[in-house]
Image 1 (cartoon, rainbow, N blue to C red):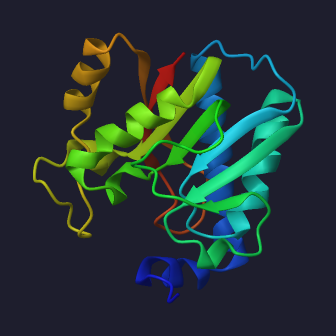
Image 2 (image 1 turned 135 degrees about the horizontal axis):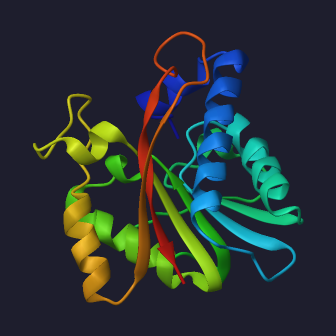
Length: 205
């Protein structure tokens, strides 16, 4: 299978660039856990990662969650394309708009993944991530600021906007508890990492 242009471009990024992006994810996760009182009750902690642009992130995700929870982590990485993750432990080819295999999980983690999902299918991702959790559990959906502020159906990069107010109303209708978080992060270095603006929609079970 030929890799998508997006995955090909990501694989060209330097290790230094990936390390800075990984550090940003670590800071974001810390902000989320500071805002939400969550202590996973099982060992190992089962984490489902929803989409992964680069195989170098897989090990980082595992270390990041183990450091955050101070427990062993069983990591499963779901991506609709599997070729770029073929050598990574726990990588599974799967369309995350359908029910996640092999639940339950303690955490579902999607990092800027909703923008890659057609708008009318984004709710399926949110609902599936929540349904795959055991209690207590978190479904974390990190977004970039422009993902949720763009008023047009498509963003300038060609991907989809995320109508967060619409999804919040759907969550409320289904009685799902959530937190909406926003942040601005500056970890130094050249653009586009410096001054990351975004947040997360965190579903709580």
